Amino acid sequence: RLPCGHMFHKPCVTDWLSKHCTCPVCRYELQTNDGSFEAGREDRMRKQRPRFREGALEKKGVHELRRLAAALGVRTQGCIEKSDIVSKLERSGRVEIVRDSGSASSPGGSGGGGL
Image (tube, rainbow, N blue to C red; front, side):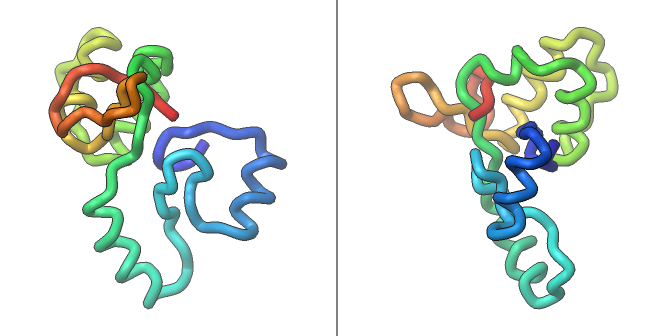
């Protein structure tokens, strides 16, 4: 599982990460040990949001949603139902929801989903 919430078989993602420092699905840049790269990465990541297909967030488990929310800095205190966490993530503007038609929702739009 990568910080953006996407999950892969270990051999598949290990091969990818040996060549790239991004998620193969959403291109979320992963943390590295290179200080000069990290300064630029942090700035770029403030502007980038993980992408999810419409409906994909609803398919994730509660623990996975809470981990994703924590990684994105979205507070889930007070969320009782799974749908509460999904709604908070969608309204946070921290994720981008890609509609089936190919257009992405605006921050805070409804819908859910992972690429």
